[in-house]
Image (cartoon, rainbow, N blue to C red; front, side, top):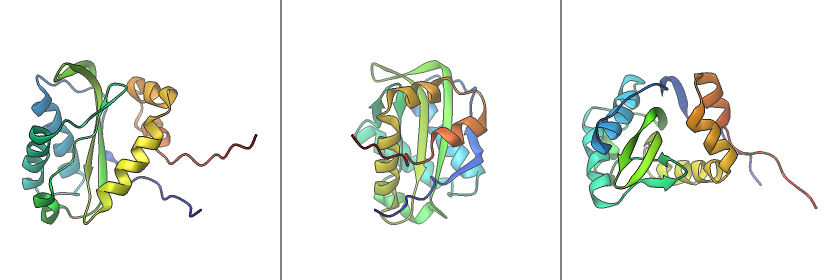
Length: 152
């Protein structure tokens, strides 16, 4: 089995004490973090909002993973993720989101990033730690690929 690379998380794309008035506001903040890390052009943020209008990016455990549409691929400079934590929560169409993980990827890179994030977030303990994280270094460690193998 090939070794999984670390997720492309720039510390500049981590915001741990944000506040959003709406789901769209939260998505735009996740996109702005990607923009400030140099991963995207501003146009990509609109495609993130557009994607959310067609299908919810809420994945459970208080986490949403917004990402752009295929039309936004040309606005991506390099694969990256952002992490924006909303300690007071954001109403996500009836669900409460505390962590918003924005994804920008060239080509089909978003599929791999989504799969890796899903594996990490399937662990309720890691998801809870992510919702409560107050240090960017801790967020980066939590979002590294699961490498342990169990044998029984």
